[in-house]
Length: 313
Image (cartoon, rainbow, N blue to C red):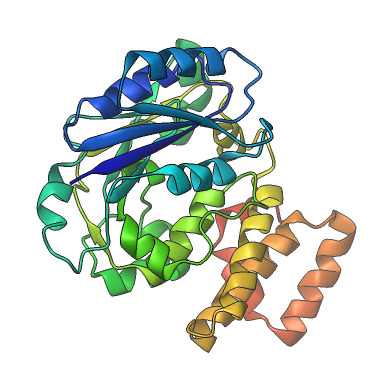
């Protein structure tokens, strides 16, 4: 196995060295690709030092040296990669020693196009733990049962919390399959949740297999300045960001002829539920009445959606 580990770097000078070292512990890691995304801190300097110190570390920036977000940064990393497999790591997270244990065996089978595992959590400070423990606790982010690859896409779309989640940090993909089957990699128009949107589409096009689900293979680093932590903890309105996610999924589903009609309909209903949740109070009742009359299942879908319930009134 020759694995390219892609790390988008933004405002992570305190953490990126740990992320890189955690990836370099594996002989299978052919290269660590850092894509520095015009950080306001000293991350570029730290990344330069890492690239000078380690022969397997390669550093890139966007051609205009600008800030483009995690999605385009990961796309650039994929473009520059030379390994046979792709793994991702956020700059404030890190791999554990068992990260590729399942992959070593599973990827011996040619039908395996991707492997996902479980993600743990680490609090970088007492303040971060005080603020966010109620959100993450010490739980694994994992898929709760071992599913056939054909069930992974529908499990994520239909079953939501009961299916569980897998993180991009715990995912390894066969590069050839990724480039052959997905014309669009990470969406460039999503600043947040672009990894979730990518995982939805990836599980539709590729056969993804469960790896280690009952213990962490990578760790989410929680700190006060993590943007997605602010969303998950509702310091940034989650409905306002996830409506863009579901709008994008809805648009893709209706453009993709292979998505069954009933699945497209369900995705549209999920999008509408977020649309209602994010609407001003003066519009909510009108939208609820409209969908009660024309498509009441949009409301029913929303009632199973915690973000819809929390933002309904």
